[in-house]
Amino acid sequence: ALVDGWRALVADPTALLLGRTVPPLALAPGDLLARRDRTFASVQEHYFDEPPVIVRGWKQYLIDADARVYLDVLNNVTAIGHAHPRLASVVARQLRTLNTNSRFNYPAVVEFSERLTALLPDDLDTVFLVNSGSEAVELALRLARAATDREGVLAMREAYHGWTGLADAVSTSIADNPQALATRPGWVHTVESPNSYRGTHRGAEASVYGLEAAAEVHRLAAEGTPVGAVIAETFYGNAGGIPLPDGYLEAVYAAVREHGGVAIADEVQVGYGRLGEWFWGFEQQGVVPDIVAVAKAMGNGHPLGAVVTTRAIADRFRTQGYFFSSAGGSPVSCVVGLTVLDVLRDERLQENATIVGAHLARRLRELGDRHPLVGAVHGSGLYLGLEFVRDRDTLEPATEETEAICERLRELGVIVQPTSDRQCVLKIKPPLCLTVADADAFVDRLDEVLTSGW
Ligand code: PLP
Image 1 (cartoon, rainbow, N blue to C red):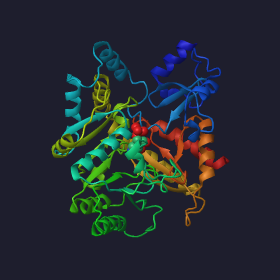
Image 2: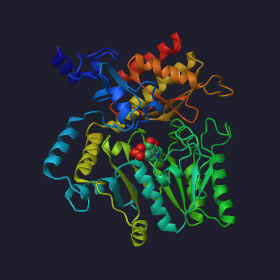
Image 3: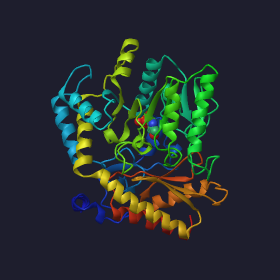
Image 4: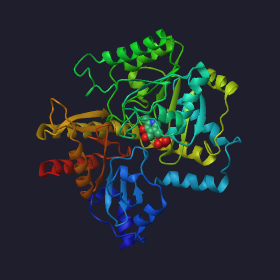
């Protein structure tokens, strides 16, 4: 029965009813959680009351130790899906051939760097390979310092850019770090979150946000502290998957460049086709950054990140600084990167994100006609945020309700979590192979929870 169950799952995972069980794996979870708590410095409690024990992934599904199947709605890292057979076989082959300290040259690093730069505007032609989004942002900020000889950085409030020194300093999201705004070093200058749903300029012209942030850049320059760089997510992720107001980055980039600074685009979360229509978030804003930080989807869960910049900035950095990462861009990481790009193209996952994402957004908006708790549906492609409010005029965040809804959805076979500083937005970032049937299954369960109560 066990083998048959798994064969059925592999042959047609969508035939499984979410929340139903498949035959258990030959794995006893036993006291795994208690053992983990003794030995593993985990922060999972920050995200889950009871962290699930996940033992298997397949495409857009996760399977726990009790063999329950879940739809994975939250996993923006695993863009091409869990346990992709092509990825598994190239990694195995590469491990049998060569995996080394990245100090050497090998074909995959050249090929991957070329493929990556081909996806970006012409001037962004020089790649540094690292192991995570935090490292990518860290290096991006160091490149900016080297390029401009300036420390000052303009950052948006309600943003998250990573946990390492410089990346943490520009991360202002209080959901991730309640001390975030209180502990900024002096070189970080923050401006209002460009959250057009909740910002102080609600209902006003979208351009107001960009003009205000640009005015802050000019004010700092007039005071004698011109900023060296602006760092921004190109689609407002932590705030709930909200597009930046029209013209926002154009205004901010122009102001920073006018005073000799450079523009860093954090594409760690949104880049790589998740937005559907645009491969990168900055394309939606019609701008070209000087430095781009990429990670998450590019490795599909394997530790892989990159900074892509201009030759001029890279050369300037080389004269002043030193960068070496033992495993960053290792042969295995590079074949992973290449295969993820192949799968995105061959399985037309960006197109799928556009089609399934539009269907899902439409169905979620329809929920809003019947359930007053639904405040807004934000986002694009398979990068959506469903914001819950207690009152559509005051926008009082439905924080406790959102947490309870996530718990109920988990009982019904859907893994999803809250995001934003108010924790009242359902973060909807599934693998890009999500089907229309999955989207319907998710919305039907959500409808059930909103109707029957949580
Ligand atoms: N930048 C953004 C926008 C992110 O969302 C994240 C992670 O959530 C990071 C940077 C840091 O990436 P990592 O967790 O891979 O270090």
